[in-house]
Amino acid sequence: MKSFPPPKVLYYGSNTRLAPQHLEQGLKPSKADFVILNQEKDPCIKLAKKTGKPLIFSVDSKSMQKDGYKFYIQKGGVWWVNEVPAQYLSKKK
Image (cartoon, rainbow, N blue to C red; front, top):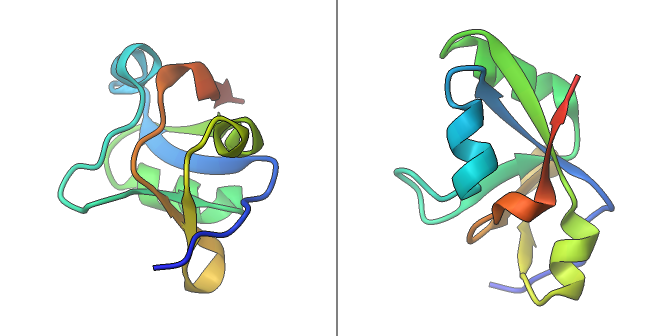
């Protein structure tokens, strides 16, 4: 699979219950091999609403890329990455 340079910021949808865990441990793949991110906030919000009160994280994907992380693009603005360490995450209001 070929990697591509990501946009400056990508988004991840979660819920408020998991926020402390994400901010401490970062994002790791659950059932998939990759963490799934999106270029747009709306799909993240829709997905996060299924699991509780939604919370969107911004991912500093440009800094991650500069630090050696590889990003893979899929259809519809979906991006894959192996993990997102906590220092690249911030809560989006």
